[in-house]
Length: 228
Image (tube, rainbow, N blue to C red; front, side):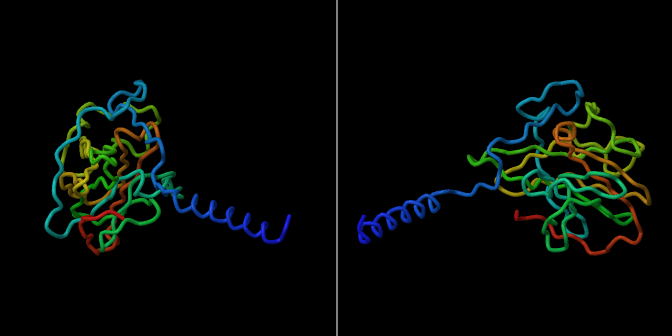
C-alpha cells in the first residue's frame, strides 16, 4: 500500500470515530426507571406505579424553614452511616437551596420547621415522574423488609415529626414546573426519628434518619426552586 493511500484510510477512520462520539447523547438517567413497590402492602408484587394517586403540591413557606430533598436521580446515592446504617434518597438542602452530593443523616434543631421536596425530574414528555414520600416509622430502628406501611400513609398525615402518631408527606409527584413540596412539619424538642419512602423503601431501601439536636446549624435553607 502506498503511503498516500494509507494516510487517506487513516483520515476516514478518524472521521468515523469522531462522528460516532459527537452523535452520542449522555443520559444521566438509567434506561429503565426503578419500579416502586406498593406502599401499604408488604406482600404485594412490584407494580408499574406507586399506590394511590399523587397529591397536589404545596408551596415553600415564606422564610425560616429547612428543606429535605427526596429523589432517585438527583438526590444522593446510598451512603453508610456509622451509627444508623445505610441511608439513601434524602438530603438536607444547604442555605443556597443546593442538594449535597452524598446522602446523610438529617440533623435539625428543636422547633425547626421542615418541608420534604420531591426533586426528581419529570418524564421527557412532560408528564409526572417518580412519586416520592417520607413516612415516619414508629420504631427506634429501620423495620425489616418487606414492610407494610399504614394505609393512611398514602395521604398527608400530621404536622409534627414524632414516634407517637403517624406522620407522612403523602405521595409527592415529580413535576415539570417546579419541585413538589410537602406540608410543613415541626421538629419536636428531642429524639431520633426513622422514616422511609412508600414506593421505594422495600425495593431500594430508600430511607433516612432525623436527629434532633440543639447544636444543629441554625442556617436556614433556601427553597429548591431549581434542580441541579
